[in-house]
Image (cartoon, rainbow, N blue to C red; front, top):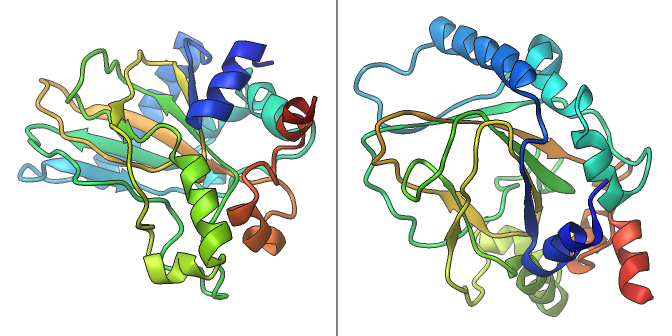
Length: 244
């Protein structure tokens, strides 16, 4: 379970980093599975910057275990409620290969272009496990704009949820100063779907590795319009906490 301070950080900033939520053994086993993905479809010697793999979660059990065989699941459901989350259908393995001297000009939110049924690809929470140490800035770190989960919800309340399509993943909100997430392999990042984020540069010596899971509460797809406007629609425990 997240403690009160961690929940408060998630509420205020839109994300929280939980140190060493995943054991070194599970990280090691999942890293071998990442090695296998790379060996099967190598990025090429000339590739620098972001490179992704999107395997079905059933095809990469050691990666899925980062969520299902650790305390990560209970940590997430301390925000969404016990038994609320669905097993993710897909895993994103995110590499950031140096040298990549990039600094993002702004943020985005996921889910555009829309799904085949026309619905935006919203979800409840992004869960990320750092698979390599990122102890300094510009080491392939994920960039986040703290508090923009709140600003995005305000934007969609003012302009309506269909403004998502017009924004194309880049709602025109005022941004605070960005932060780069630092941590060690095995650290868990939990971020609200509406938190603005982006890919950073990598001027470090090694390739950044992370495994991301787009977590959904059961029934989320049918209520995406409400979710975009109501920050805590998928988070009953948080809503209860804020009402007391």
